[in-house]
Length: 83
Image (tube, rainbow, N blue to C red; front, side, top):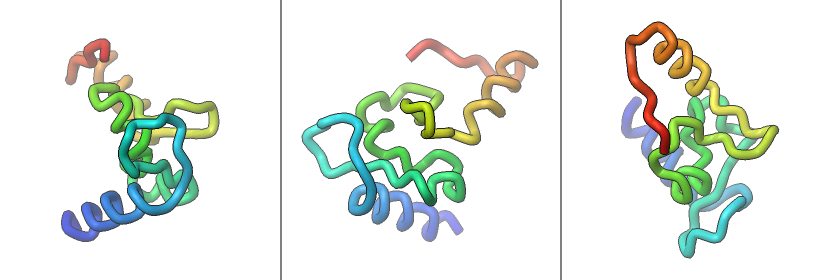
């Protein structure tokens, strides 16, 4: 599963989709399929803000793992730092 996930993220995340930022690379956001990859297909956003816990940057880009991380931070299981 890890190899399949990596192939999808690195293949689709750099070939299909749109770009929010000009990062001097070929990274792209693949929103229609991102929910299946739990936020990992926001590659263009990730390349611009690699230390951000929330990979979604526009109103329609929903990173499904971020609310879970916020809850875990609130419960003091993890610590989220400012990017």
